[in-house]
Image (cartoon, rainbow, N blue to C red; front, top):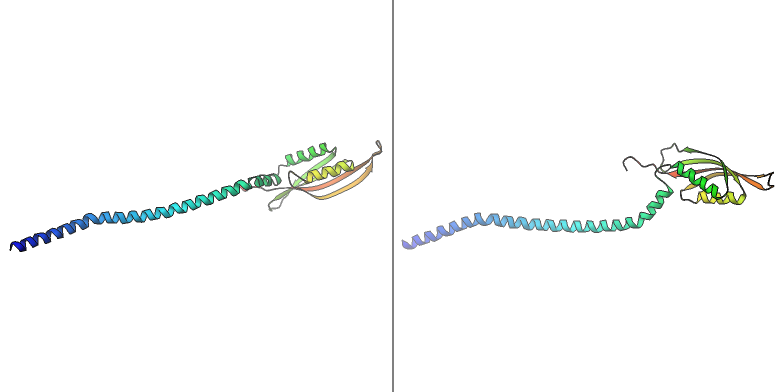
Length: 182
């Protein structure tokens, strides 16, 4: 009987320890497994973030390389017509080349296309070399100015007995209207 009692105590103790151990160890094991899963997810996330940071670095490098090209493009085709600046540039180049601009008129592009254009009609006169140099300078920048039509006529100045070239020029300067969303 004493043996049976001892076996019963040992069996009940083992069952009690097993039950208590299962309830006490189970949350710890569940937590440990969850933490291992979380660690794996965080490592994957860290690797993804590292890759994205590397790609952002590559993009920044490309942007830095392209920045001067973007600035040049913005100067060649500005965001707005800037007709005052264009006309000032034409006038300055005319003064530099001793070209007498007698009239300038401009009109805006009414289409929905982008880039838009600003059409300039101009009359001027001067010597042949001055006119040619003026034409080269206005068509070579800093803003894109496409000469679409040019008419040159020669006239003799009765006072100086020199020939004067009369020029009728039509050209287009381009601009790109930015959207309100940009």
